[in-house]
Figure 1 (tube, rainbow, N blue to C red):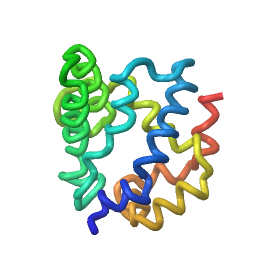
Figure 2: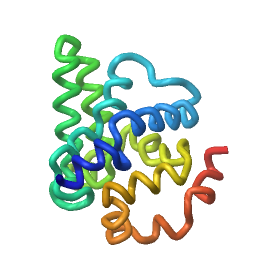
Figure 3: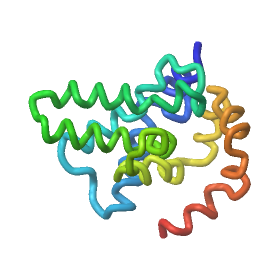
Figure 4: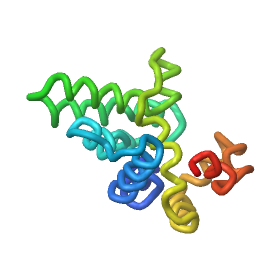
Length: 157
């Protein structure tokens, strides 16, 4: 099974846990829960593009926002304005995708990145280890593990 699929089933992007922690981070960062269908759908589907990906931070993994955006556009097809907003949120949640496609990061970017602070460290590390993501993450971004989540959480208080 490919690492992207493992991530969605029991890893870091687990399809039930990850949206919950992103919503909690959204509430903490913006002082309110996500509003409307577009924001909730964006939170629910933004990482579904990892399904079938052979990598998380490689060529395939960096394009994962496109699938989530297509799913959101389909779900909101009768509401064009909301669909466009959800697509912008999803495509803008990945800084790598934004850099490659000359886009600005969206309001979903920060909650997606700090969502890790809203779950027990042991649970995150267990899922990252079981899925194999921890190996890829430490190879591509070793500095993120140097400081830990406690230090990063100070700015949220």
